[in-house]
Length: 587
Image (tube, rainbow, N blue to C red; front, side):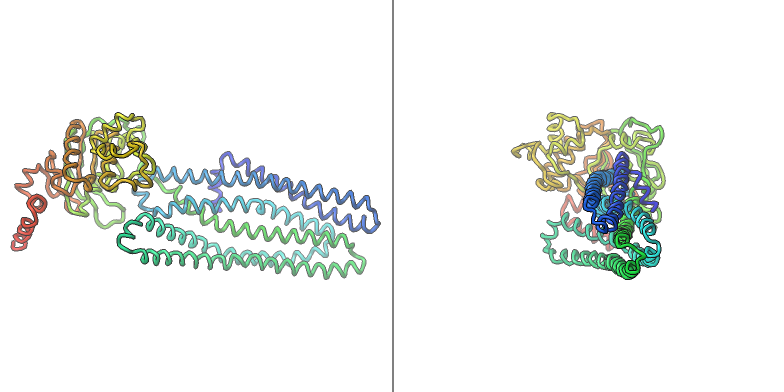
């Protein structure tokens, strides 16, 4: 319950709507509780004495009470809906804002599908708990207490039937809630699994069709869909016991009241109007108990969702700007001083181990290495997407942990290995690099990235819609747009993480020539092709997270066997590769 109370702190200005809604429920209850008293008067006085004016007056009063109860109920619905959905919007906003502050290491702890579920389904659950549960939560206890009180006021002996029924209903509720509570957490986890398969299948739909794996994906979906179905069936198998159990108890109580009350009325110790009034109050009490039980079930499910939401909100952000952080990056120099890194504290081995090198401002550096040699990991430490586990990473002569994160990342442009474009036009995507850039600046960046040649062929040019995720452009075109977007930042350090892999060699050469004209920008190029780094000032060769060799093309070609093999395989054809491999095997 503590988790739910914490989330109530996000009500903000909507707390007044919720309080006003609660007040309207109390007023509604008061009007409804007066009606049985008026009805008893009609039977005992008006009907008994055949007083038609009295019956009409009491009937009019009952109608007015019913109308006022209806009006207050409608007003409650308006304020409760505004409070519930406003509260949900603020919680979603808080979660999304928190996720935007997460470092990569924080995001590694949550699956994307789980975050989507927590911002949608889980928030909807707690919204429904308020929208559908707040009225019975307020109304139930009020109707219970006042209904029991009025019943004993009319006839204490007959109302004693309630003292037998209430403990039975309490025991039933305790059993159902205790059984269902842990099931709701498993139910939301099953929703996570379903969303994960749906998201993965839709994202990779082209690969699925290309490899004719539609049947396999359908089987995967069927598995998680059945998991969700089974979890839902197990959960609601117990939850639905609530209604028949309460109805059985309520009808049993009604029969007992009619039996004992009828005998008392025949004996003259109870008036028929009082019996009718007690029956009305008993029905209200039983309905209030049923409402309370439904509230408990709603709360039980919402508590599971609240716990999942708070896991996101309470996740400590791994990376943050220090107090009195540096706001300016002096230049584009980069230093690694005995840097080691692991993705998790409990990981057995480091992804990077003992890495040290210096890059002067304005230099162009190439990084080569096999798959899994930690090339991407290395450059992600420069804009502080992760923090080094050991050692120091410096940019502009200062430890990256001394900078304001926004200032550091504004000074470091990075074109990630996985190119990402967003829904919208090309202009909107390019302006991520410089929101205030005019058309001249946009076209200049596109020319440097060789993106102008295909943009000029598009009917709408910069205003061409890319579709979701940039589906309307090819892989090479997407890479060039991402390069143009990074150039618009005018960074001091520019990192290309295998960013021209889908570009032909002639276009890559033109991009390389344009980058060479950026003399004051430090350029770090991760590549699989030797031709991409052959003209750089220094080449770093990584192997298993360590620096194997570092030097110019000429130095490495003369002394390093790994570089010699890469060069031979790519620049001289397969025979040289085979020969080099054969000589190593003989050795």
